[in-house]
Length: 246
Image (cartoon, rainbow, N blue to C red; front, side, top):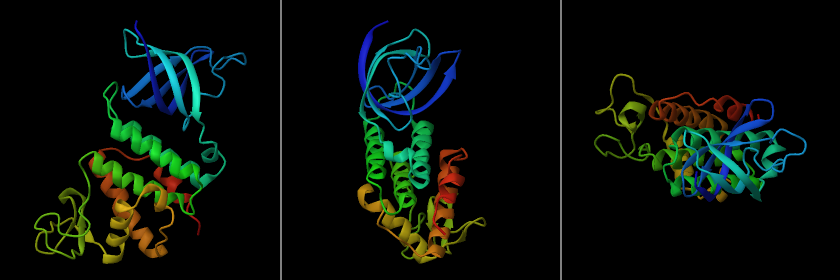
């Protein structure tokens, strides 16, 4: 079982037996890795709190013969502690971790996805004014990286400007001539908000403050589109929506 070194972000952990945990880590060079941290739940564990979700860590691992590797050493690069102390930051961070876990493939290198996640967590750790906008900007960028970027400024079918309808199955905003029966209405303000979030740098996305009605509409369009194309329900979205200030 060869020893290898990686850096990564801890996505989640689950208990294994009486003292161990299985941690899932999005690494820079080896893609998503699932590994056993032996004895981590003991008070004398050398890992301590180094393998908690959100943490950016440097790891030494043994590559296992089955699906699980083994963590032999872990050192914190950045703890992103702020995300654990504020509901809005935690909810936004959970959405980032969940969707990264959903789209990443085990032991399949994806440096762009790793760097996107790391940028998102750093943006949240800076305590932005609106963490939800940062999470939604991250989600749009993740969709684009996965090949599912929604059309927002022109019809996804014919390219006509100023579309007024939206259909996830057709790729986003569509004009009346191209829309299929299940297309719903979409205001230009909501589409403009999503386009701004898609183009924004993650560090600046938290300064985007749309009107509340526009935000609700744009959020519904984005979340529906993401769940349609990623083909699974996003469990953290209710927490993310609930963290919005009234």
